[in-house]
Length: 117
Image (cartoon, rainbow, N blue to C red):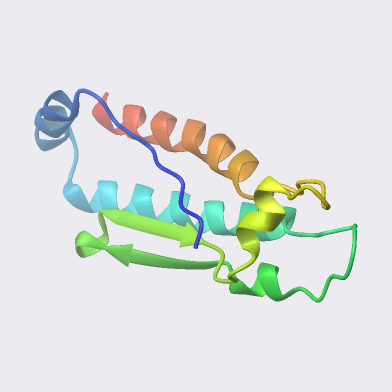
């Protein structure tokens, strides 16, 4: 499974502000909403126009939650999905992963900042 990383700096200030201003259930709801939107965005972009396409990669994009709902994970389950994302010397990249991740990251940060106000 191909994984993307997002790093948050200033986590101590974030935790302190969240404890003062927001219920932790609000944070879980933001994580749940953004994770499900990320999954839908990846599935929407996982339409491949070049070569043989069966829809297996699109169907394999699953989401999972960990850490009592504070962590959401999304990614394709096919073993060849990295070839689609990055391409090969014989095949041009048809990235469905990173554009969705970068778009959703902006929304997630905005939602978390809204909780901190």
